[in-house]
Image 1 (cartoon, rainbow, N blue to C red):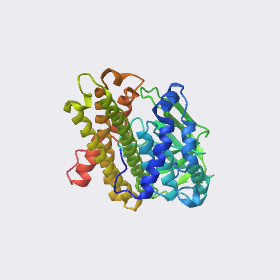
Image 2 (cartoon, rainbow, N blue to C red; image 1 turned 135 degrees about the vertical axis):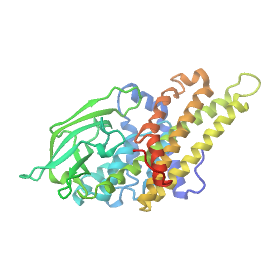
Image 3 (cartoon, rainbow, N blue to C red; image 1 turned 45 degrees about the vertical axis):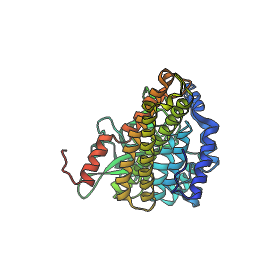
Image 4 (cartoon, rainbow, N blue to C red; image 1 turned 180 degrees about the vertical axis):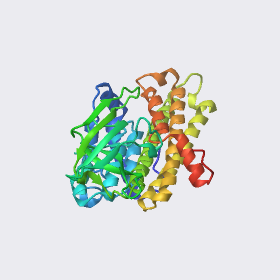
Length: 389
């Protein structure tokens, strides 16, 4: 798949360079890492050395000075090679963005250089067992210790990626507004070895090097400077991280869909059952063409979302990021399904690396927000329709 014609020469060069890196590792590498229950440390280190992990972070803190557009491009191309790095969604995109926008000078100096060069990683914890998509039901709370000024954090989180390898987790909690008594969201940096910060790995059918965890946060004591940003900023800071998460999830899905489609197209060109390769038959060719169209359309919406976000239009980016995530997830699922069907029985073998994507492609439909909640968002926020809840 060629680079979009609307991209600058610099973007096209970056895309080509990342694609070259991805091809050196590829699907076989990721499959081996999963089989050995390891982590893609070699690819992570190489991407970091080349400046790809921190391409969105400020230059003064060791980053590339780019934005979400450039970072999503990196993840898309790695995914298209069969070697996506899921922690890019979390560490530089969500956590790095939040800290670079709202962190104190000390927090920026402590975290951003490491996030940029890959020597430090950060996980992100928002989902709770009983809250689901309703962020207003988050029960993880933080209270001040009046004597010391420390924060005391308590609660539970689920489906937190990469806690076992992350140096810290950016936890979404809630603090009480002294004036109104209502709870408001706040973000806290919790070190991996903090006392009372327990984790349990969730047994997943998903085959990925990044493990999922349930967290138990039992009266974890944090210093006052563990709070990121303004205690009263609330949702502004939260969505500064959630919009990049949706854009990067779209990039993850588009890359995966492109990988599956490329495998299917290559197979359809070579596999002959009768006189011609199977790709000559419209029953094979048309669904693959449709998958290509849907992936390209989703990519355009993702690029729009990234442009809006990088331009500082958080409201416009919120709408576009949700749409991009929705479109990319649907396109990815259909591309993977059609690729598997194109290969027939071979589509379920380990040799071609597609079968495991049947499960993986559904992740983009479910996380970080379900497609139904995105449809709710568009119907309410964009179309102005009334809510049922």
